[in-house]
Length: 255
Image (cartoon, rainbow, N blue to C red; front, side, top):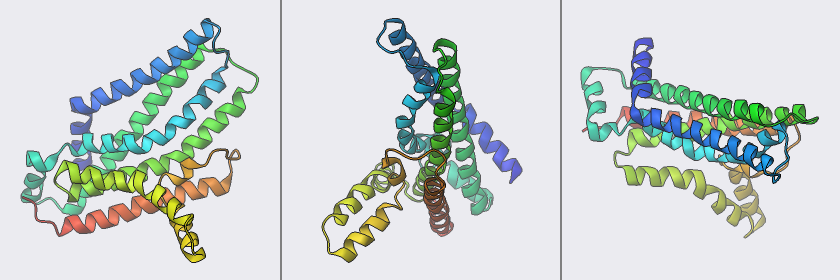
């Protein structure tokens, strides 16, 4: 498994797709930090370093959808290229193939998150003055980041499961996007229709969607219930998607 992971990691980070994606995300983070600096110089924004970190928190929900790009960068359309068939024909265990690519995608995604946020935080700290409430803002930023990570991993696991089992790009993306952005509104709509048992069931199902925790606005700092909710939902989707995806892939004919 170690050799396979090493090979997959080398292929993933060497692909122009991933490197361009990483460069674009870092550039966007840098551009946003420079915007705060420029607006501060022009007198339009007088926020502190901590406030700049807080302004990034609403963008965390986009990470659920950006996880789809990370998965695509690692899986790299292997049905069309025929490389997945070659690996299976070579005799590699399907469990190793599936988990190896999933773990590689998770590591590549975490590296992307780390470098992007690091670029943003360093530039903000260099160009934006500190403020008296910065420590509170830094804690809030880290808390919301810790809560978002399992949700991102859940979206990544779902996408990898779809990519392994749906060879064509359009239906694969349709399944992923419906699960990510379609289930929440449907369950919220059902919750408002009644009867009571249907509303309660729909509300419970809504709380299990990957976007539900991020729909919540104000959250108390280091609220253990919120963290448990995020990690529970994220791990549920990660484990469930992996189990279903691996079970289907184990029985799939590779053409």
